[in-house]
Length: 229
Image (cartoon, rainbow, N blue to C red; front, top):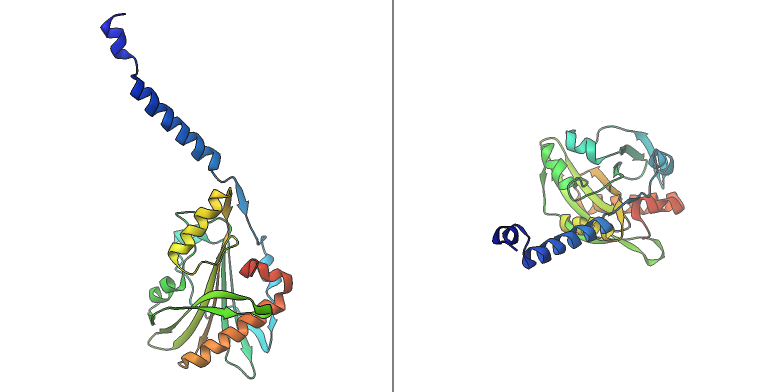
């Protein structure tokens, strides 16, 4: 065999490297998520979220601070539900539910710490806490105060990625990865409650009462917002 022919053939090392790369590609393809995990069908949010929540009554669907209307937001969200609820005995509550049917490493729901500053608000530090629900259950939430030149809002929110409730960007990304490893592309949802008051403690108590009343009024459909919690 001539030296020219031998030189043109892959070496044993090259064969091993090529085989390893082929195996890696095969594993990656096999683990590529092919099914979408969607807990909310098209238009289901509007039907499932009641117009009456405890002592609050739906009034209008405007006046809320919204995520920036950019092209990325249009790719992330399939649906945004915005409502303002009034009460004769309690503070009014503004509700935003933003839903995206497909979350990935590149496309994930915006958190309020992004959209409020974009609308001219200054934020206090975000506090992570557990909001108690019925039957001894609780969900992880984040809360902060937002101040602009014209008003102060108390904000409470949580996110759902697939069947998980991550409390940070890092946990949100990990939730996507874990779902992908199970073979699913997860959906994602942000539930944000806010009320216009400078009374931080009173405002946050109002938001927790509203959240508990909302989930209670939704019955089994509440899994859209909190999965299995």
